[in-house]
Image (cartoon, helix red, strand yellow):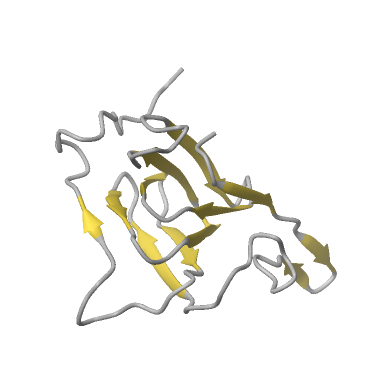
Length: 152
């Protein structure tokens, strides 16, 4: 596991009317601050990667479909520098993943349907000075990762 990454397994509570799933509460140990909430969708087979933030932490939950969320630690001085970790999250494995400041992250939509990912970052998006530092998802000279789906 990458240093400072937190994962919260989410409970789905079904009843006669449907389902309820809490994602992040102000009394959770993962909660630090509220910036905003947004939804990002990804088409089947598409990769949305790599970027990191200097000012905010992200809290990702895939609420529809499935994604492979990948984190890469390139932080100087981190005890897990050089580590890459994968999380397969979504409808069949509900979880919240907190991405620390400075950790590259991205995901690939798995399966044959569009994935819906909710993010609850600790800061609001600054349109004038975005807190995003990006790399090409496939060829960047920094992160050696193959996004090919593995058929084991």
